[in-house]
Length: 184
Image 1 (cartoon, helix red, strand yellow):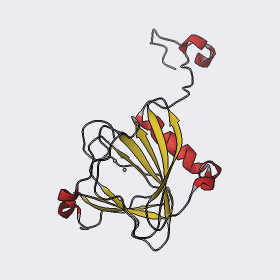
Image 2 (cartoon, one colour; image 1 turned 60 degrees about the vertical axis):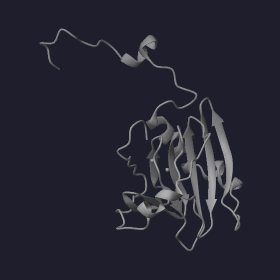
Image 3 (cartoon, helix red, strand yellow; image 1 turned 180 degrees about the vertical axis):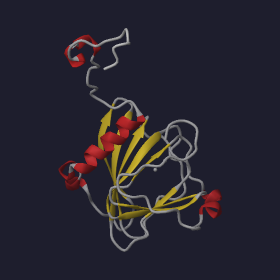
Image 4 (cartoon, one colour; image 1 turned 180 degrees about the horizontal axis):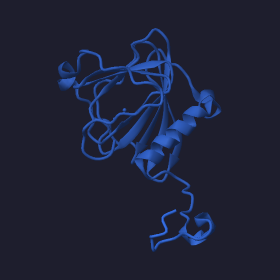
């Protein structure tokens, strides 16, 4: 202990209730939204009963809502994709729950295995595709809740498969150099 300091803490700081922040009922920061996605991903009982697969279209189910955010569960059979799009004013977190998905952007191609997590900022343009031979399931948290998903077919040539980016390991995040918050 530095005895030359005029500042000293006496007792347990956690015993001073007025200094403690109350536990939040809902996430408000990027880290808290990523944590929410991770906690749902880690509890298979919260999402597995709702998963369905549809060979004709991507299947989705709104799993949860809160003040200013939505949590969506999506399933992907082999070959299904989102098309090149952004999420309007929404930021979000994409977490792969089962299987493997491929994300294509103008920066390259990234393979996302089970447990991989991506965050995205408003205006982040990408395409998500199940290029594997097995079904996949993903969780998407949008804040604010998703109100638009503009498609960008005219930019498709810029996001064609290119030199792959190193696969994202389970539990990793990476954010694009985009203004605002956070990449799906």
